[in-house]
Image (tube, rainbow, N blue to C red):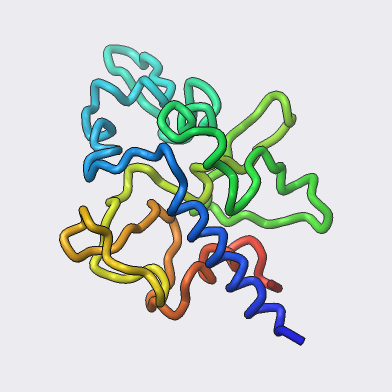
Amino acid sequence: MIPRAALLGGICLLAAAAFASRPGVPETDAAHDFMADESRCAECHRVVKEGKDWVLDPHIFTGSVVDACRRCHPATSMGRSHPVGVDPTRSRPRIYVPPELPLQWSDEARGEVMTCGTCHDPHLPRFDRRKLHGRQKPHPRGKGQYLTYFLRLRGEEARDGYTKLCHACHPKL
């Protein structure tokens, strides 16, 4: 019988591999570089006027985070590693999602839901010198570096793989 932790690790690795090899995802080194242009923040984030200043709340969006991601990433490649639109307070058993994995408010779900941005921060660097998992190869455009998949939580060592991220919400797996 396969230990549960090994099974979860294998599933996470396969899901990540499927996500990484998906068609239609921008392959340029600068796929998310437009986010560095402050004049474009309001394309995704709600900006409100407070007195003479415009203020952006990084956790309030103009629309669905999933829809924003789908502007460039096709729906067929989304949600392979984890479902989106999940309200962790309505799951059984209830799932605790730590603050470093932000949720998005959804009127449809009457609560906060998981989105692509819960696990992935598109503002993070695309490449890193550290491997994400043991079998990861350097990305051809990464100048000897490895894709980060913009993960919010990463293990310290490649042998940790996706465990830190998965265990943040699913500690018993």
